[in-house]
Length: 487
Image (cartoon, rainbow, N blue to C red):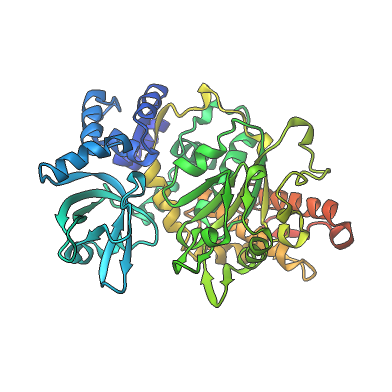
C-alpha cells in the first residue's frame, strides 16, 4: 500500500517488493570477483540477503562454487561423470540444435566448449517435451542442467546426455504490474529507477543531460530494430552495458566478422546474430574487420531498411537493433565535422548511413567512477531486462506515437521513420503506462521523447550532408510537432 508520507525508498520497495535488491560498491566488487553476469548476481542477492539488503557472502560463495562452475572446473566434473558415473548438476547456458538425419536433439554448453564434435551431446526427448517453451528458444537459455556420460548405443564410445533441465527464471514477469507501478513515480524519479536497474547511481550524475544520454543506450532493448551509432570517449561503460546487462543482446568486440555469422550460414543452414538477439553491437568498430566488405555492406542495407536479408536463395527476417560503438578523442567531438572518417570503409557510404536512426553523443556520458556505481535499493537487473524484452513486441506504443506526432507532407520517409522508432523506444522506456494517447502528457512527450529523437536523427542528417553534400547537403530535419501541445 503506497502512502503519501512514504520516502522514495519506501515507495519503491512497496511497489516492487522482491524485485528490489540493495546494490552497493561492496556487493559489486564481491560479485565481480565471482565473475557472474548481472542477472545471476541479482538473483543471488535476492536469495541470500536479509530484509535490509545485507548479503550473506559465505552462503553465496558456497552456492556459486557448487552450482555455477567456471570453465577451469570442467575437468573435475569430467572425472565425476567418467570415473565415478555421477551426474553433474550445475547452472549453465544451453543451446539446443537438431540432427535431422539421426532424428536427435542435440545440446551445447558454449561456456565449456561442449561438445568437441557434433553428435557428442544429446538431449533426451522427454526433456525437450517437458521444457519445450524454454529450451526451444532461438537464443541460448540459462538453466540448471543435469548431465551424464552414457554409452552411445551405435558406437563404441561415450556421449554427454542432458537428462534434466530447470529454467533459470526465479520469478514471474508481469508486464501489466510493471506498467501500473510506473504511475507511482514522477518522470524524474523513474529516470533514476531505470539507471539503478542497469547498475548506475543516479546521484552520481551532474546533470539531467548526462542521465538521459546514458538511457539512450537502452533504446534497442525496448524497441525492435533501432539502429544507432555511438562515438564516445573511453571508459564510459559502452562494453559493460551491451555485454553484461542483457542475455538477449550480443556484443562483438574487435576481430573479424562474416556475413554468415551476422545473417545466415549457408553451409550450416543456421540463422545469424540478427535473427537470434534483440540487438547486435559492434564494439571497437574502428578495429573490426569484415571478411567480405561488399557482401556485408549489401546485406546491411537491406536489413537496416526493412529487417530482411537475402543470402543466396535464403530470405531471412530479424528484429535485432544494429549498433556501432566507437571511441572518439576530444578533438573529434564535433558534429559539424566528419566524425565517421575512421569507421570501416563500408560505413562511408551515405546510403548505408542513412539507414541508421540516431546518433548518441557519448561525450555527454561521464567516464566511469566510483560515484556512478549503484548504491542503494534498485530494480533487479534481470527482471528489468525481461520487462524491456517483453515490451519490444508491444505495438500499442507505436500507435500512440503515430497519433501524437504531427508531420508535414514533405518530410523524408527515413527521417520520419527514424523519429517515430526512437520516440516509441523512449515511450516504452520512460512512460510504459502511456498505452493510450489520452494518457500522454504532450509537454513531457516532447521533452523526453520527441526532442531527443530529433536531436539524435539530426546528427545523422548533418553527417550525411558532410559526407555526401551532393545528395544531402543543405537538407534539414523536417518540422515535427506534438498534437495537443500548446504553442
